[in-house]
Image (cartoon, rainbow, N blue to C red):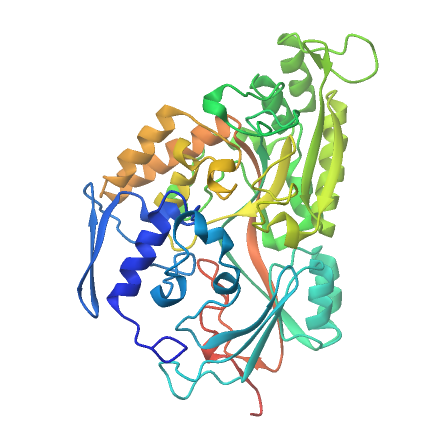
Length: 467
């Protein structure tokens, strides 16, 4: 049953597919329906998914936390362009999970109550679940580990020594697990320096970035970074330096780019010099076509990220690149408000930094995120997965080939090639293979950390000791 007591049927599944595949909806999870030709209800409890090509790995549609099923009765009037206007439905979705949205406060908090129609009559064990967003990671960690105001805190991107000190209070413990998350710097392939509707728009490749269209510039920027220092300062045992956007599972990890693990300031300078990108007026900043290379580097507000920004800015200054730093509240930066100029999807900066990964253990859908068709822009309300606006027909061919390949070793080789395209074309600069770090109260039982799906995957099993 749905949480409102009505039957969950195959028609809801079919509706969800049609909703997401409508090009005007701007569905953020459209890549999960890659190559889906049709979804039909065989009977009330059976659905048939037809792919347009042979699909050795069909587990995209309706699989995992990132591809949910929505109720047809609630979203029937929200298909296509109308999707952005369905505030009530988007803020209070009817579902089948252990909790139901009671109150949603945008960019702030969500209050859930137990679902009386949940499939297990004895669960969940809690009557309410309160999720608080915004703020910063250190405050979230403190609320769990020191003050006891919260029971669980996730994505605790906090300096390891600070977490260890907080843990000494004895109220909770830190837990972590490695999946495929990578802290990376995205390199804008489009011109973000113009005003108006064309800002950071791909425009069929006719709106190139004034600096990064010369690959020597981002290559030198990558060479100048000391990933080992960034890991030591910000992550400790919960991080590993990486040159890959796809570092795990191990079978998919390329070794072709490992040279980036050694910082090379002098090599970066020589590379720029050889390309004729020099400081002609002696002010310490190199120029391209007479324009000083001065870039805007943005990320979310977070102590570790601001420390990373400061170090990277220093290293880039050493090779003659000036950097302005900007940090944005996480609830805004990672939000999907199409009216906000500050979302990571809008990408109104030269470079931006955040972490991304994928659910499950097969990277096909994840790696297809950087196909040309996935470019983020006004036409999809800036919800496209291809945030750097990278477009390479050769990369798209690999995406298509992987979708038809069954052999695991062959899939691994294709994934490595795609990774190497992204890294060597400098669509992004990988920095840290990040472990997922969270904390929970000592009294909270049933937490089983999962780096490959939502951390709340088994929240129905959570309970309180002594209850």
